[in-house]
Length: 155
Image (cartoon, rainbow, N blue to C red; front, side, top):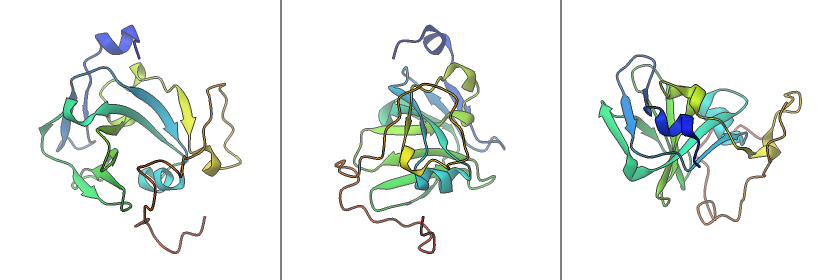
């Protein structure tokens, strides 16, 4: 991804109370919307907007996020003081996906596609022509994964 706005922007961010801050040392690998049910639950919204970065290029400059193991394959990071969702990461992946809204300048992080579209809420009209992908349940990260989300959620 070679967007001049992203390259020129200082990629820093954090939670709403300021207890956790981060800095990113590379241009994003991807920026996307995720409509999967796990992301909906994790961010309390219809979708998550996420920025993919290599884990070794993210520095936690103040505090550290708390982590919830949302499945046997993945973890979600958040501020334990204010609850701000900060990231999603597959344990076995070299990448982490930071929430767009937690960046100081989210306006420079333009999503390139929609993911997990099978869980899109039907009354939410997507007003763009970006590519749409379903969740790849055969992904090596998801193979045999067990959800740790609320078992009463049958959707």
